[in-house]
Length: 170
Image 1: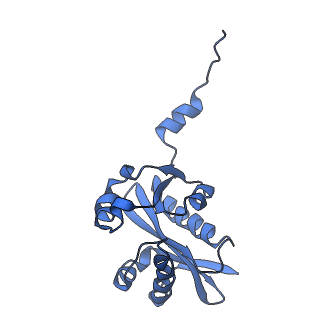
Image 2 (image 1 turned 180 degrees about the vertical axis):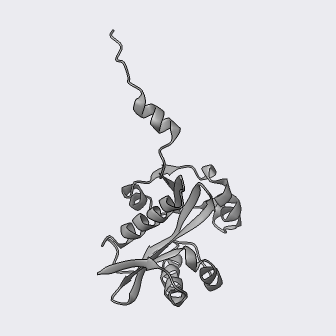
Image 3 (image 1 turned 90 degrees about the vertical axis):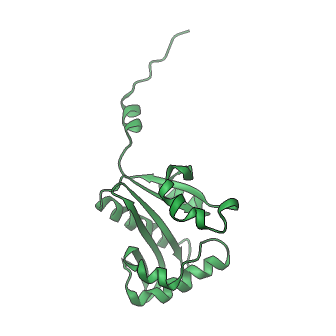
């Protein structure tokens, strides 16, 4: 049985090892040990039989916006619902904070689309671009797609849901 819980300092070496497995495959961006220790409070971990088998973090940008980052599952146990469970818990945390939107930059676009995210443009999140993307060695040849999950229906969606389309006769 898998348990999702807040990460603890003792989990950081496992997070580092798991993330670096995917960094070596150029699927994720590297995180330093120092960065992981500093941001451990942002992380949730999936634990099975006392072993960390997945992780994901919720980075807050402002009262309305957050990012899911460093989401991964231990090699060999993907496709068992652990990643989805982490995303659902992270979205729950985001809703608890009152965020309106959660986004992610990912090469696993299909996974996030199955979780209810929609593809969007990275420029919609200038804080992310200024904070991380411009410093990234892959900036000019980035393979990541941007996906977003609206926690609060947008005005456009609300208006659209109340509009009745009248069919015109020829």
